[in-house]
Image 1 (cartoon, helix red, strand yellow):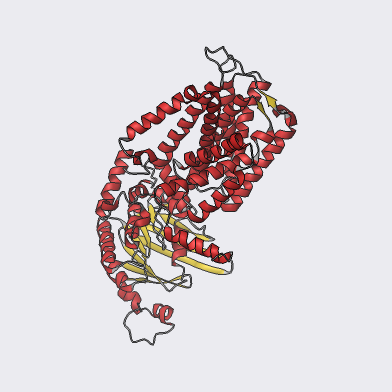
Image 2 (cartoon, helix red, strand yellow; image 1 turned 120 degrees about the vertical axis):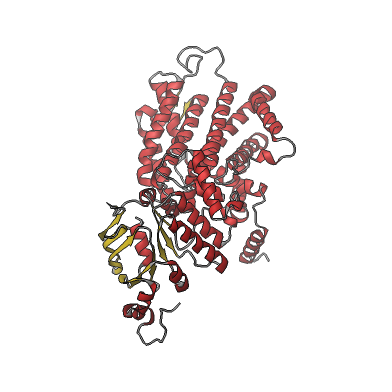
Length: 343
Length: 248
């Protein structure tokens, strides 16, 4: 049985050693490089996971969800409300994030997945905006004041745990979630018949229906799954940063980043969101830390998006796989040159 | 008494002022190969789409294997045993041939292994097993037609509706496709085939239905319908031709 080959299999030597080396590096990362790099690693893992969650519906199913960030915020506020307003431990908030995001995403999926293309994108964007505005005027979310979450050894499971709820703890939490998301994506979308059905409806919905695939049901399943994954990351993020505000965890930029990461990395691929997530997050963080600019990365990303769309629509992973058609690139360069009188 | 596996009664489908199917009543016997011919725009593909649930009929009914299935969703009909292909071949290009086969969803309780075995058998039968792990985007047009047929066979359908199976296929592959249809028909499967190539229709179909301007104007074996005045009128706009059959 063949399928998309994980990129490490293409490196020289026995891929098992590469996987083992990567595993050791990921586990030892905060111990080797300290708190600053643990924070960078933590952020990268979260954004890779979020980009992968968007990739499920946007890449594999081909539905451009521009409201996906709302579920990150819903997860954050579900955990935040459980912990800050009701005094429950994080695990209850975590469970609540799953339940609430499942219900909300299903209710959104029923009407919006009847739409396609730009109509679906606009509907989901409007949904996300309405959630943000609602959170800003609702008391239980803290409204414009936001919510502060407690963080002490007894706020994890309700009784004190014998380890510190520290930067390192959150790094490992994000590592576990990110690896679980990758494993789930690999199994469901690359190996299981479910993934073939998702790709089938993306390629040709009528043909998929004619082959017994209940496309309405499959679309809803993918949408709910992708939203729950985003909410799960949101819940951990809320506890990690301790203070959440609708303008932060429900900001449209969260969706934008997920889309850009998946697009740059390679839509509908397992490793695309990893490549795109790392590239965008590191560009942003490192330009902020080393160049002192929080906006320098934005024009760079803009250029990268244009280059990707025009010359490498299958993203970084497509380039690595040699899927870029040189004739297409030449043709696009020529057309652009002629259009702007450069040639 | 005939054993009809598919029957439509007064099936009508309109698109605004255009009546694409106008009260079509047609019965297909279990185990036959029924051809459907007619000039472009005569309503053949609309008939396929309405029978298989892609269009909701404005009036009339569809019965399949003794059960009324009018208005059923396409996937439900497919799982019930009514398979179809499309005029424009539509493989899932980003998947391998095998994955295309395994994407098919049925209601039976076959295990994953059994489904994989079944996919292997069908690919072997259609002689596309050597490209099982190739991406469908790299297949030739004829191979894509075979893959489409293979995917439909994964449904284990009682009736297979084929929309122009020989269109754009080279003669050698066309002959292979026809052989496969005959073999599958010998196993007891019923076929309803739209085809413009009259040589194909003459050798393939047990009986032929002729559509014109949304109506079912004639039915019989190929020789009968090719002599039918209404059919000649539909194809030639008159009966002055010396030909003894409808034009190719």
